[in-house]
Length: 272
Length: 273
Image (cartoon, rainbow over the protein chains, first blue to last red):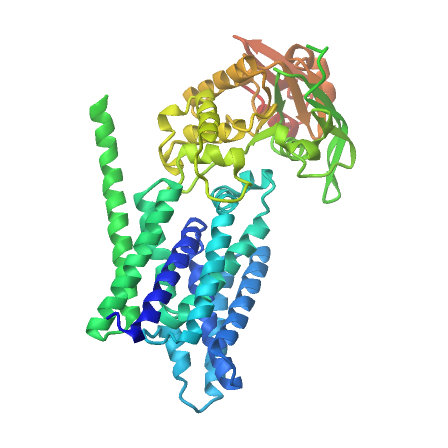
């Protein structure tokens, strides 16, 4: 399981889970789960276009996800971001289907970008992934405080000179970068689970901002490590395990919070 | 009191929004330790006035000075408590963390607590009586508690002027009384200057020193006794009104229906106790 051809997967998976938890923490607070679902799908037209033009799929992916960020920013300005996000999602899939139809070749890269591939991390892939993860982590920790205030109560943030538009742009750009780094391992459809499942579970269990952030990282790492191990033993796709574990974690944590909230009034009454 | 310089000086302020005149020639001064109520109906220009004081809207004419400088340059002297306070119940933020973000939310880095931060936060929590729910999730607090948390968030930077937008609007009687008591304590104990907007002046009468009464963008200002007079308010409304005193409460009503048209009567009714 830790043989040389698996090492890159372990390293990349660990780095991806870290940044997915950091950025996902704010995806959950900002109620941006839909954007976090739509943006990674830019990988599909990106990879298909790159395949068509014969360039690195990573480049095509960055171009399309970047365009997605700009579109979402524009949509935020004209209102009904939820509808716009849904339309963007389908637009990505439609354009991807068009590009794919223009080539008769079988395009394995496209499918591995969508669904992930455990052995898909070559040495050449690893360095860009680690570089992006390091960049995202540093930016995330640097802007944590203003982004937390802006995400909690934008009006109060504005009074302290924090620009909501700037925060939104930084947040979406970080989201796009995490997406790009995560795709080779877990894939476009499945990175979403890592972004929202562990942070939402962590925030249900801990009210402390930094402890819930740490807990989100621990949950995300547990998810990806278990998924890699299970995938290795069973030979089933890694995405299946990421999806199952993320959903399971979320369900357990929410159930616990629901249960503990129901108990609280009873405790208060008996204390009177 | 007047031998000090004012904390807030508004002179001949006129504000237009989208080509419409919202405020016309509004003037008033506020001194340290005063509580001023800004009274008016919806659409009278209360929120526009507050946003201009906060430096979020630029006036057409007139000046707003906070401390001794124009409003924009002295935002850190002002604490603001917005009307709509509704935290997400799942937000991973304790009351204490929200207050802390008022102190240095604009700075970079992770929000670790050091001794000085903890002290400042504890002081602000104590000032609003929020110690009991300091470690609770802010989104799970009641409306009145969330409001206290935001007041502490505004107080923690030790502003000299605290502005609250319709703080009594969504509170039950008990919470409203408790809030009025709290504002009274702030002006006495901390020499805070407080500006509060409200539809109804009555709950604030025990603690207020000054009154800015807004009707259609024009203001009458002074003490309650100076402003709430039939003569002054009739001039402001542009039709005759009466001021009734009953059990320490004040009721402003339009004069006999045959003299005032029905629309005017309805507009005035909102000012009752």
